Image (spheres, rainbow, N blue to C red):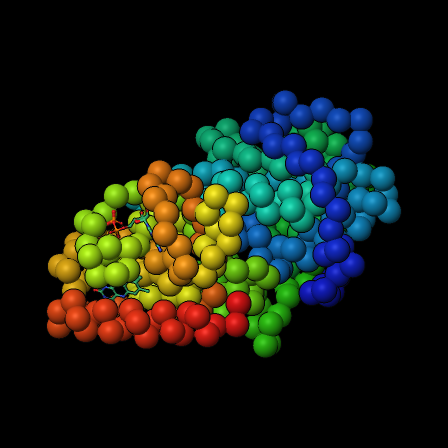
Length: 323
Ligand SMILES: Cc1cc2nc3c(=O)[nH]c(=O)nc-3n(C[C@H](O)[C@H](O)[C@H](O)COP(=O)(O)O)c2cc1C
Ligand SMILES: Nc1ncnc2c1ncn2[C@@H]1O[C@H](COP(=O)(O)OP(=O)(O)O)[C@@H](O)[C@H]1O
């Protein structure tokens, strides 16, 4: 198994142009591929190790790099009613793949025909015949194909006959814990922002357009931009957070609330950010916030005065935060 070093020389980046394919038949290239497959939700440090290894073997063997992932998430196909939330929207995942230097991204729909392929059929018909894969890298626990019939052992067996190389990556550990998308989701759902960010290798973010709220914020000296996020995007646990805010190409300090605003008897879950040292109308603008630290749980204050006192304290802590 290949060991992964968190800080790789490939982290010092060059930018490549990422090509995105929803259909394998749209892909044609003279060059063979170094490819990895999986959900890559979050594109976290474990995923990053696989990507760095792909780029390394791609460069050594004159191969283009590729990630094959599924969109929408196969769990929506198996359990249509499941309320699964993801670490990345499709845009975010695509941007991370581009930033980390992947050349080709395959976004395969998990349709009837595809999900009936056995592991072996998938390797022969898709990876080898359609995509001309010469180097395959998979994660330490990856299995694929109907009934999860494809795994590292099968790949080793087929690699000799079909003429590709295969490698398995070791799990990456932080503080003796395997990094995984599930662990990052759980860290966010319990407000452990720093832990989540450490496993991601970047600060967790949400983006969306600014919508109209109840206009209470401005009356208490804290106007808050309400962010409409994509419904599949996982939101951290209810509460207040220190964030970085990106709006109209500028960066600001911010304090953000995820919650139902119980003090003003709100019912809808909202994501709202007060931007420090800022006074502009930004309705309908696209904004991004990066979570940096947890401030406090959501509280039902006894009136607006108590809420304002707490917001003053949150502001002081945000100003003092070492961004
Ligand atoms: C950092 C931060 C923390 C907040 N914490 C709480 C809270 O714990 N409880 C609460 O009822 N409202 C809290 N709020 C305030 C509500 O979000 C407030 O009702 C809202 O800003 C009014 O927004 P509106 O103008 O969109 O109606 C917080 C706001 C911010 C910016
Ligand atoms: N410092 C600021 N932080 C956030 N929004 C601000 C700020 N200054 C002005 N705004 C504007 O004020 C709006 C929020 O005011 P608010 O009274 O909370 O109304 P709403 O309930 O519609 O969010 C934002 O959408 C933005 O256009």
